[in-house]
Length: 297
Image (cartoon, rainbow, N blue to C red):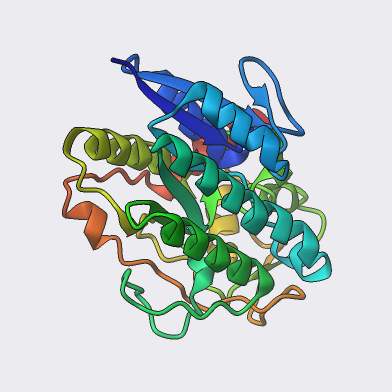
């Protein structure tokens, strides 16, 4: 019998990669949900509409729901916390309730921003302490997911990049606009330590976990996945310039924190729980970012 999965946020940066990964595996019947950017085979669904979510899940009857839809713009959430509540908290509640009714396993995609960044690396047993509303809203979503069913899962990931439709789709690729504008100084944060992770790697991990869950049943609780290259946005910008033989003299290190929201200094994730399962895929940043940015040079 075909395995059945629903992927929320399937038109987004991470969601597209997850949808593509599952669609490429013929053992899975995959339904991708989107709202503002519904195209192709994706199905439009307002996740903040409880009835719509319930009816869709009842009709499709998935064994797995990967909830990657989220409001993730950190500074914007500080100004409009209600938007984050609807997407990151309320929608999660509706999905978990609908999943429980059909016996589906929920994987909630969360963030390294649930930690304060003072004592890395962070294992799954460390108590979260988010510094901003984004991190708090994602932690609330985690708690909803795990309280709905102890067998559900959370996958925390760091800053992501991958195949994009525009440079501003990722907090990493958006830097390339300033990297290319060599006539103007480009201050780049050189304080916060980041672990840029390719969406394709996260998608591979999710497919591997889902297969293992349905075959062996011993997948539940919190997991972490991250690249292990420790860099700042300044480092990333210089790497981008180097990849495409662009000057770097206009890229200026900014040693102060930036943005209206507090951010963790170093929220490195300990990924040993997944590694012990024999699941591992990490794309080197230089290789990954070169392929992603080629169409935008």
